[in-house]
Length: 71
Image (cartoon, rainbow, N blue to C red; front, side, top):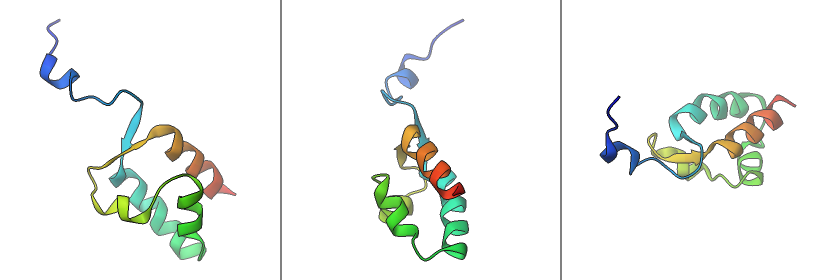
């Protein structure tokens, strides 16, 4: 199988996720709690980072945020 080297060079060095995946979660947290920005900040994420749906965020931060939001 051929490898598209131009695609590999663009891949992040760590597992990541697009900001667009996080937006629905943030919207649900906003509906249920007034502490969304505090929750995001506790995981090193700023709401302003979510303005670009193509921005990448570390997968570990997303998973940790999702687990905390569950509580």
